[in-house]
Image 1 (spheres, rainbow, N blue to C red):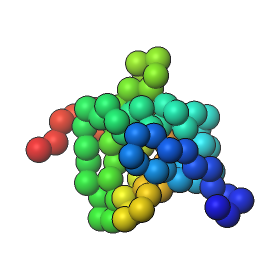
Image 2 (cartoon, rainbow, N blue to C red; image 1 turned 90 degrees about the vertical axis):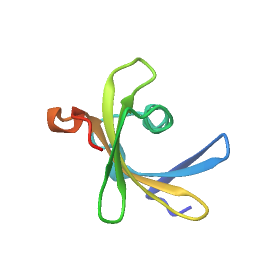
Image 3 (spheres, rainbow, N blue to C red; image 1 turned 60 degrees about the horizontal axis):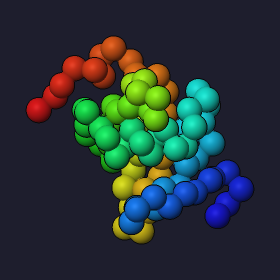
Length: 88
């Protein structure tokens, strides 16, 4: 992988975590936990923003783009109040 990425393999999904996703100090295991246990999914133009819990149960938002062979996580931070609202 290029030096600006980190990757991990969880279950059958492969994630590449960009350094931009680590800007707010969220650990990659917490990002993946939030994706796997999402409570809100907010579709974006070419990506998905989800809200889910860290391993400690704190809510975060994670932005990622799903690819054929892997997903790229590009954003993670403490959840913004506006993203706590359920959307259908």
